[in-house]
Image (cartoon, rainbow, N blue to C red; front, top):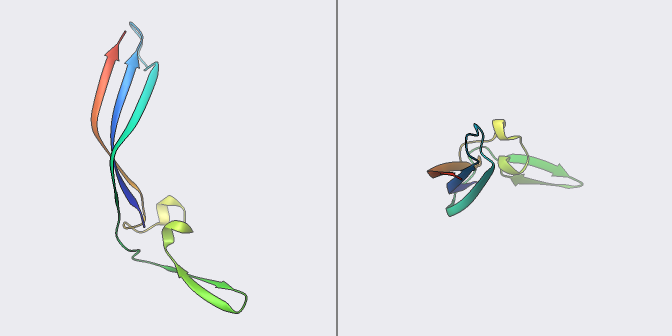
Length: 80
């Protein structure tokens, strides 16, 4: 089961720099996702079990319900 995150980002720049000196991320809210749409069958000694694809497969192969989703809701840029 994936989690949906809402994140706020604060970037701190030194005077005249192109890249941020410091980046701070803060999770504002998180919500559980739905049930797995493609559960996998894992076989063990004498038994089998169904688990969500998010526990076993790489990110690119997970279903939409298991894949974590991050939404950046606010970006603040501070120049020192």
